[in-house]
Length: 388
Image (cartoon, rainbow, N blue to C red):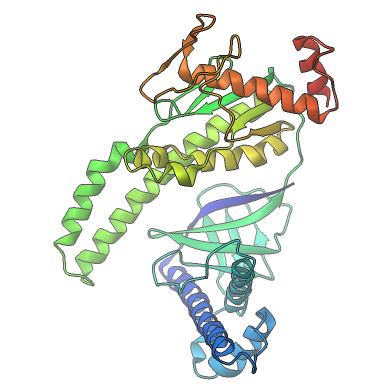
């Protein structure tokens, strides 16, 4: 199984300049290629009878060598891979647009998502990485040796540079403490498990919101483009990175624990983009990172030999009684305790939803394995579903 690995680089002033030059060339190649593609689309729209073949990644690179590199000699000061991969990513983005999977690609701006990809003679040592043209670059952490990645991607966040590549890892079949578990995501508690365990989110944005607002207010008083303005921008970017790192670290710890200790994990297919349309709860929902939580579970369940079952988003997990199965007609967000009118069952709202998700995940796995749930007891169902 291929996994991405990312670590921070310990760069010198000369290397920082080289990295910025590579990112600038990649950005320039992307923008020039995108401008050419826009002209081709406009020409085909205005002259439908005189259609021009839409350029591929190879066509874009040939055009770049013939028309752009001859005008800008600083293209030859960096690795040839930087503009090549930029045009390749542009072609992939345009394919996704024509398939209606993503929107039309946008022009890149300096200082925003600066990155580039290199391949060729790449070597990994204990605390340094060798890449073409730039040479050996030190890292802050110890690296595993014995393999050579085909390509590496170097990106910039705030004023720090990071390098990433893909590594091949073995899938481990770890013994599980629990066969089935349901997870209910929420704002008060990030994840509530059907076993009764509760994981709280650190709410990093809420913690640093006042500090971030103060820094942004002071930045507005500075002249745009001045030295103090750039320094203030870097401080704001560092704080944003810190907030995102705290959130991601929390999610990694929780998802790793769940994937290692549970065989079948049931989670609801939340419409996160629709939930963010709620202006009163959007900030709290985004601070939890529901999408990232599911994304990490999807690959970690494969890595640790677990199974992720995504329950339909219209399944009424919160309105259904986990005791008798009776469904309520309405349940407001302010009601944090679930009370069943039929059997008198009373339970925490999130825990009740997690238990229902666990039962639904069990049913879906049993059906997928071709078992008849009516012929076996609940204990036998769990054993057979676990063996599947």
